[in-house]
Image (cartoon, rainbow, N blue to C red; front, side):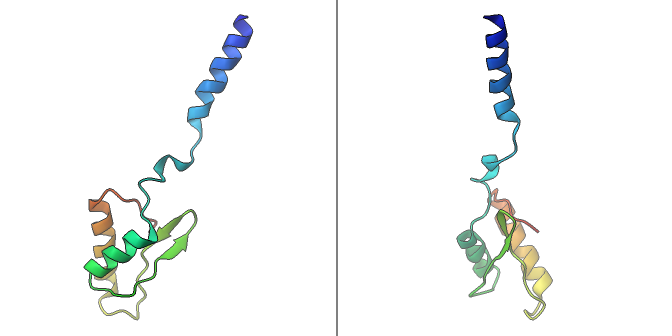
Length: 85
């Protein structure tokens, strides 16, 4: 009986140790990134797929691209959204 209890406790405890979608609700969606880009002066912005998330890469063909990219990331961060950089 105690061996089964110990195994059950180990399995239950190990279930919380896996990295996965616990941040899924905090990751920025493409729509949220597009909205942030619009607030930063870029219309028709398309986020870049980066692994399981999205990045707000602004190409160097956009005038003042570094400042606009920083603006997008700062906007999303202020909302508590995670974005790949």
